[in-house]
Length: 309
Image (cartoon, rainbow, N blue to C red; front, side):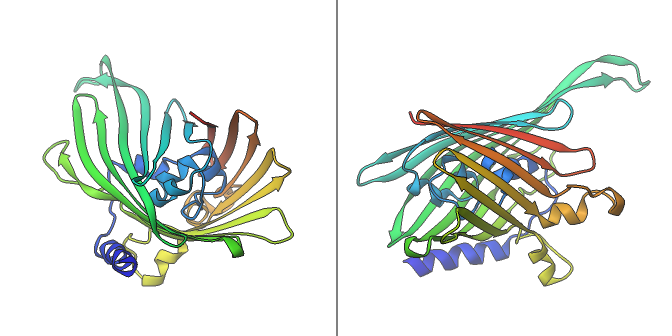
């Protein structure tokens, strides 16, 4: 059973390839913690927002079963996400999630360039997740998502499924994660032209060092994208580190090789591809913040709140 599920997920990921898509907002659904770790999050356990990277992680949530994230983009583009988890004895773990992005207001002009009003654009996705134990320390999970993208009076609706596996090795302080995200199809198109969803295949490992309060994370992502050379797809990787200072403070850093390589000019790199963040743990809630640079003038800020409901 275990081998069959893994081979099915791997085979499906190799058959499908991501292309340009109007649903790219799905790629940025993570929390402030995941952003600070540059998206190296597929192997993270016990975090309600990790379901956006690997639905199998839902089975490992022990505390803080609700998360809320606010994402400040460039200009007046803002987004947010929420997730909630609940365990049912003898049945498994269930979770619900939602992601929303608003792109602000745009001027509407006629064929002569005269201003005649304005319009808006937004995206949202709703998800339902199920996760359970497959074998000793091996968890699986799946998320069914309903997705909508809207521009003025035009809209597109899609349905997608996320699959994931998470293997914990407690004696080694190590976890290994694998996921296939946003696998699906449009149900309604903008103008009759069918478009793909941003299929994403990820694999990664997390390891907490012995004798040092540091959790290291390494991920490959977008492994389903077409590339001119086979090994070029492995250039899309991210590295993250999380330092633990006592029970109440975490400092985080991350590096995304793909963003660093393809964003900005050679002279304008500065901190492009790098991220950092801070996590504060209190008795009643956790609060996270992250900052990341993805372009010469594109600096993103994220805030996340975790509580128990």
